Image (tube, rainbow over all chains, first blue to last red; front, top):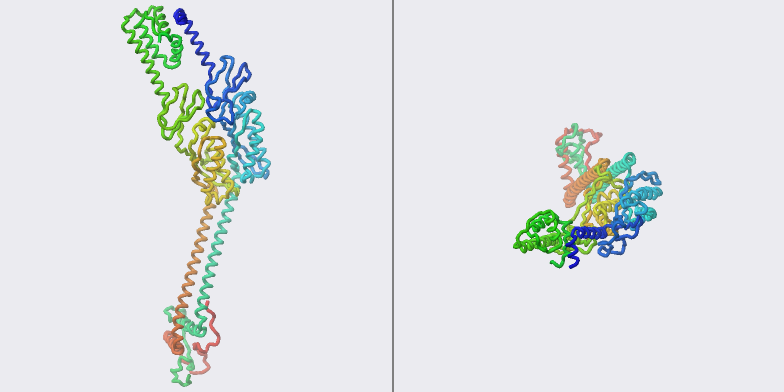
Length: 291
Length: 346
């Protein structure tokens, strides 16, 4: 009970002491979340890293959680542990075949060496700014030595891998690992390049329309021709059985049409001069000639 | 309790951070009501001394001591219970998971139902909705303002494309801890995958036949990329809402479909004509065949009958003159005398 007595004798002093102890305890304890790494700086020098990124560890086995630092002598620099965005603004790129392209790319990266990152740029928010121009130039370098059509082919992947390798080389100086580089868009720029592409599309379509019409006409003619041929065959098959009778039969029909007795009204009127020799008048002549 | 004086001093440090005001109130009452007592903790003594120094408070009666002491403890207990009840129990909905971090470190994921963890400053729970399907629409251009999302196709044409990505959170811990901006990442990955897929097909395939194939391809590709980021996200599907020519060339595309209509109508007309010609031929030959069948039964009689019937009709309607001189060439020659055959049927 001597401690209790001591407290009773001088409570304010003890209260102060307790406060100091609590404050020290609090400032020497650090809560490190899963999403952060922390560089411990002692007298201006990086001393150690809390919760450093390790690709093999899963969440739950990381260095996150409570950590201890020496109050006042050690400061923390927080560094994001997550995969970070790097969105590059649209870049104009000239391909080898003189196409101008507006390219929009993004990278995903992670700070794997916080100490180097701290030494080179100081804070994680400045890493993106440092990498952006590098990504831009890697992109221009890579696309500038390839034809435009490469963007529309499976080799696009190769291009992206090359850009990633190019960027990675520089990024490692910042303690950064490039997770991925992807080309989001590769578009023709507004204005004349886009206009001429549209014009090309238009003329291609107009030509297509023409050939579709022509093809339709061709098919129509073929169908008509086949039908006429089939009809001719039908006639020939039927009439060919007895050409002489067909001749007679058709002549009879023809006379009726010619002289307007089939209820049509032919132009003009007809006068028929008949010789008494006419076969039709054979009987009329009283069988003078005989058959 | 009386033996735990140092501990109590320290434990009083807690409420200073948390709920100070109310405690102060309690202490004042307590101190006023029970001065001159040994007190249950060092702090009590301190307060009592403080009050004595400033001359506050007279010596109260002894009877209240146990009553008020109990209240003080009960209030503290109630506070602790309340603290535990509000921060140590977690009701996780059926579609949710609770990601538990202990001093920032991931310790596990809570399933649906009522769950216990350590209370608040120690364990924190972040609820993640895992069943909800999020829809991200991608239908505008690079600047976000122009109405069209123009995409280059494999044959160097341009289409206007609008699509949406449906996704949900599969691994709540990965989703929370792995990516800086998961939603933006999903959008960009989907866009990259879509443009890659469109770049492999021609314009006609992209706006027509291969749409569903493209949708599947993009969903699969986006999933692969996101998995490589450990995004903890599952792509449920990609839906192309609209894929067509840009408005600048729309007229030319309409011209093509007009041409297709025209071509079809040419063909239809030709078919109609063909039917007509064939039917006429069949009708005429059927008639001839019927007559011919009769003719064959009695050739001479039928022939003459037809001849006379025709002549009758022809001559009945025309002016007739019978000319005696024999040098007049008759106009109508009976078929038997015709030497040359008629033109073949058409």
